[in-house]
View 1: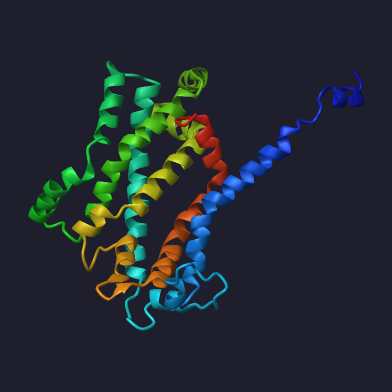
View 2: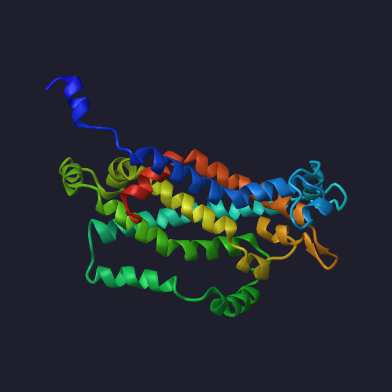
Length: 284
């Protein structure tokens, strides 16, 4: 069959452009709140509080100047650094613990491994508020209140169950023949993990790391209750713009825009690995 004959045998779908248009509309619909937030951050407080919104009002950077402490002198950098520390360190610890655990559950399953998995899942069903008071009392007893390492421990324990579930799904996709060949060549478990498992499951690891980073970065309840002046994170700093004098909407939107940038940057940097990972394992 010649090339033109093949082209005639596969007529172009009429629903393709329609589906593309629908995808664009859905994308714009999901982006609309973010666009509104950014636009509001570029207005003055009076224009930002107007109802209905004044989209054609003059633009200004006063909200961003206030976020960086132009009049109050409050610097956002310590809270941002605390968020980076808690999110990055807890994510690295989660990966270090989740990958061997998932390997044991997927490649070398122990007895009643399904019970182990559902135990991990059951820990996510506990309401966070129910554990807040005991954690507060324990942290007060051991002297970890207003300490960033307390958040690292909490974020690690919160994200570890879902990381094990995701990594177990990714590792289950690795052909057993590859692992057996590496073992026959004399590779030990650390070498198999480093030279075989990690390269094959890199998209899944990137997806798991990004989700753990986002969960840690956005967490506010524990940070709001368990931290204060020293270990306050970026979401806690965001709430400082809600005062007894009222809600400074433009400043809140400016702060939310700046605080969202690290998550957006991480998502764009890992978007290829993220798509591959999400289509490979747990969410498939």
